[in-house]
Length: 114
Length: 114
DNA sequence: CTACGCTGTGACAGCACTGTCAGAGTCAAG
DNA sequence: CTTGACTCTGACAGTGCTGTCACAGCGTAG
Image 1 (cartoon, rainbow over the protein chains, first blue to last red):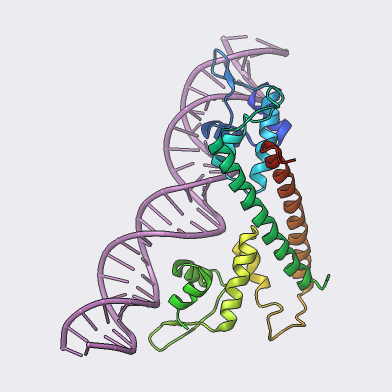
Image 2: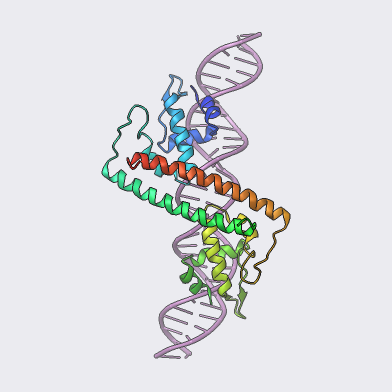
C-alpha cells in the first residue's frame, strides 16, 4: 500500500510517516518511481509506535525495539545492552505511572471526587 | 528566599523558575532592587508544578489549578468551566495511564518478564 | 492529451520546553 | 573600596514533534 492508505489506516499523518522513516522507524520499499510501498507489518509497526510514543517514549527510544517480537520473530532476544536499556525504560515507565497516579489523585481531590 | 535557593530546594533550574513566572504560574514579590522573593507556599506550588508537569500536563493546563486547595483555601470550589476542564484532564490522564500500562506490558514481554 | 489526485522533496514555521551567554546591577564580606 | 557570588533582562539556540507550502513527478480516467 502507499503512504496515503497507511495514513488513513493508522490515523498518522503522511507528514509523520515520512518523519518516522527519516528517524529510522520505518524502511518501506520504493517503486521504480520512488513511491513508498508499505505492507501489513508496517501497519503493525506504526501501531506500536503510536502506543509507545503515546506513552511518552521518544522516537529514538522506540527505534531499537521495533523489529522485536513481531510475527516473524517471536523468540527475539534483545542484546544485553538493549535489554539494559529496556529495563531502564520500564523503570521510567513505572515511575511515570506512579507520578500520573499522584497527579490523578490531586486532580480528583480538586474535583471533590475522593 | 531568593531564586537560587528555591532552585536548590526544588531542583528546578533558575531559568525554568523565571519561565514559570512568565507563564503565570508564580508571582513572587520583588525587593526594591528587583530581586524575586519566594515563600514556602511557592515551594509547594513548584512541587505541584513538577508533579503535574511530569505527568505530561502542560504549563498552560496547570496554571488555572495552582491557587486551588493550597493551605489557605482547602474548600476552594473551581468554577464550572474549570471543573469541566478538570474532568477532561482527568479523563485524559486515565487514558494515558491505560496507554502507559499497555506500553509497559509490551516492554515487559520484550524482556520476557511475563 | 488533459485533468485530477496522489506522491516526492525541501524549506519554513510553530509550539513547549530548556540551556547558555552577554551586559549590567546588587550585596555581603574582606 | 574591591571582590565574588548572586540577580536582573533579553536574546539566541536547540530538541522533538508537527503543520503547511511550493514545486515537481506519477498515474489513471476521461
